[in-house]
Image (cartoon, rainbow, N blue to C red; front, side, top):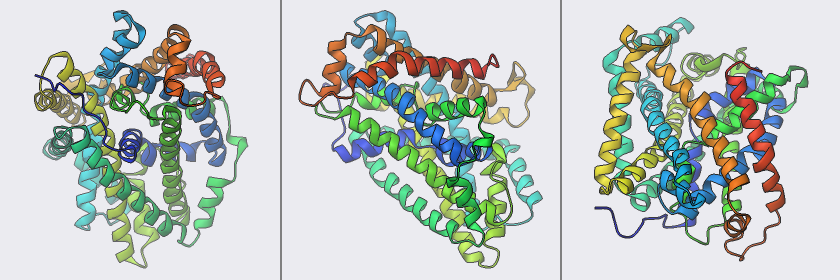
Length: 453
């Protein structure tokens, strides 16, 4: 049977750190720098911040309103807040998307464990060809890639079964400060390298000559996916918020932390890459193929510092990946526990077993097995494409439509003002953004993903 008393976060600091951890992930440390590198540096960051303000924060606030008002798992919360079971399917979509993401995301997260261990063993040094061969041989090994995936899921499971306050919140209170300390240390090491000024100039001097319509769409997409919108995580975490939680302030804090981590990641990668003459726009291979070479060259004269930087960076990646995995796993655990009247531990086992199956198959699909290819894509790539390009986009779109056009204005005012105890000066701006700006932007992203625009 489920607990009679719904659990929740024990402190406001733990709540903010845990929810920020759900947003901060590999998208900040891995994807943001290379997308920025491909789209004009500071020019892209300016556009990105505008997208955060006009699109991401309003939709995040929508999810949090639904979660806190519903005080239940994502599917049930959408039904409660709308007063109609027809809207529960948006919550079901988030639960399905989240569980799928934990499965395939655990594969990439497992790579960070492999690279952290390899850094500790001082194996990440050699020629550029060595780093490419190292990565290719690793993902071609079924034992290694599946093994690290399963270990990552196990670590996530062990945190989840300890509950919201005893597991998720405690883990966030340790991991998030460690993540910030590692970020600061790595930024200092990077900006002190010879020639790092070129990287800083690239990051902070806008080059609007590289800005195109594609740049705006890339910025909107990065803002949307970086903040974990549309997968039920924010809605689920908000269901554990207290009644006096300041939703607007909390949303802005989380968006600020997430954006700050992304920019600090740029401060790590751009100066280091520029210092050895490598452009930081090498795409998805940047972290696992290009960056080890950058660290090798940048700290060639002081290998001991290079060793520390390498270990710290991949530990940073692992922590970022784990905090996101925990939050998305919680979406499924909360759903299974409440909808099927199971204990938290039993629900977590069910979700973890599903993730083990999905994660193992996704990992094996990268090893070249043809029976794991669908529609011309490996299962891993298909899950990545489906969630990022379709499922998350639809979840965010219908969430903004629900809040902007369906929910009574009284409910929105109550949630934004904590039942009249706070001022609602941002309400008119919020309504405009959630009714018009956010849905239009999300539709543009959706059409862009399918090559329509």
